[in-house]
Image (cartoon, rainbow, N blue to C red; front, side, top):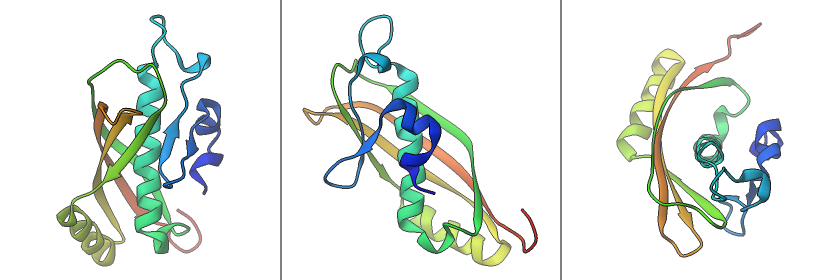
Length: 141
């Protein structure tokens, strides 16, 4: 599934930038009571970026698995008054462990780290998203 076609992601107005990274435009609907970007919008961007990372790095699994976010930890570092971009990554060890789990058991978990940066390149938020992913059995999930 295209990340940008998920109804909630559409609602936030997130888009892909010229580098293929998820970007959140600063818009009135995304603001909190202080006029800065709402923490929930930042969380949503980071979570969606972690899912996009999985799709991009494991395309062979895209149509044959059910991914579920199990756990997330975020830290908000700076108020946001403009567009932000999500930079996801996972360690080689985490990727290797996940691939071994999927090969052996047909299910596994992986942690994806996401850094959100403003247009000046400052880190405004970072998070770690733990995904549980299971292969779809023939005839059902």
